[in-house]
Length: 265
Ligand SMILES: O=P(O)(O)OC[C@H]1O[C@H](O)[C@H](O)[C@@H](O)[C@@H]1O
Image (cartoon, rainbow, N blue to C red; front, side, top):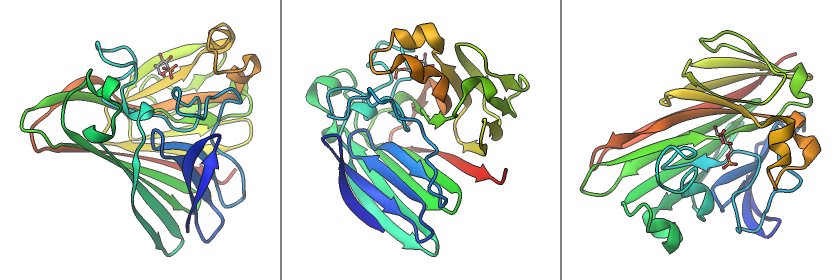
């Protein structure tokens, strides 16, 4: 089921599955603000200081990064998609699933941002709730008649309860036990397992090339205006990403999928 809400001052779409799972997506950024499993538990982190008025990127949930990752290029930091207002596309209810697609083209990007990346494109991001799984299907189409380069990521902020009681398994580098700030790029492996103080999650990706793992630590968090000082230990970002810009031919499409499943404890 689909309904409309307001989050801060942002229009948002609520998806509710028959089993009670729900997701809230702001049109600004096609930004997933909340994901609750059928047991009613919130699985994503959202900063209590995040702007929710379209004046700046939202801090938490799942920011959509496109066409540049971070400062790896001379364009807008983390790209234009998280700073643009998307449109609702098709929605569907099938069995126990609920899904909604969000769409963005060059014409939706604010003129000031579009100047820095003047290419024709179409993005589609579909969120599907299916029991204890959230799936995000991301598609990038080059609708221009020349090739352009892009990077992208789904910058998921997990609510981990206590950072220092969190472990990540499944990276080529081995298990990570979190203690301090980190900002690391790992080659993509198809599946990770995140063990937090009170949950076990399987994170899967296809089509992306890396996992980025980020937490600013105590000092880093103090320098981030839209993050309260105490919040750094409450989240961890684990992001399926294509960190370096790579070409997409005229008329071609790219697809990436990210699924998160809450496992029995
Ligand atoms: O503050 P933001 O622009 O949202 O970026 C937040 C973070 O995103 C990614 O995880 C990068 O790897 C980090 O270097 C960056 O600090």
